[in-house]
Length: 262
Image 1: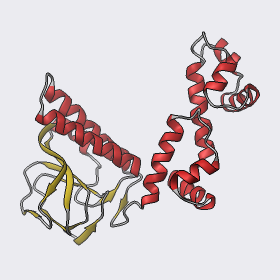
Image 2: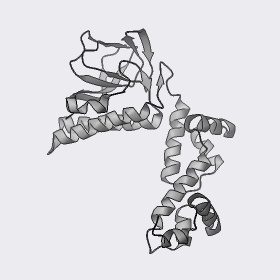
Image 3: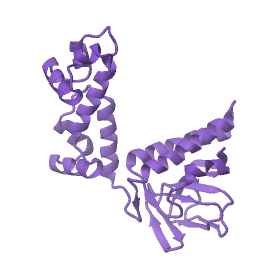
Image 4: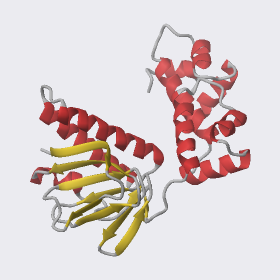
């Protein structure tokens, strides 16, 4: 079982504070950096910007200092041998920058860990294990998107990530180019170029996919007619809905229902 030994969420130390553990802390340490810091790593000093993360293995020297404000979130934990698979392949002892949406989720897991640690309830150890396993799984997921070194996410990346989340979560709403660009304060050409660079697709393609996935779910509700499903998913007309659904799923919405949602 993964065991939480100590944790902190939005912890503020004295300005310019230094952490120095030449022999490590005896356990695993995950850090989410929320203010500029310098980390002294085997390859030399490295500047960390807000949004950086770092995973220390047990026994690994820990030495870092805040440039001014000291603010971070962290989790110290131990792992049993049977948990080795959760840790295998993770980036250890190097700064990395998860994509903004992954970073927000990681930060929330740290918040929940702190709540479980300081206000224990029934099955607290099991919940802490579950949250630590979620944190490690998120690190594996972020691995393909992370950027090593000091290339911190730029502010517009976080704004685009938030806008993308709301667009997909509320796909039934009208999401035209003007609304998307205004939400991130970028021109149309800038927004679409940045979106493509981050997600390797377009907002239109992702919005259509989200609407069709919602439609497939709503079509399982036999109390709804196809016209209602089209409207609830944000399609301008049932004709548009039928055409896009046929192209994506290989059958019409009514055929999809008759086939038993296969």
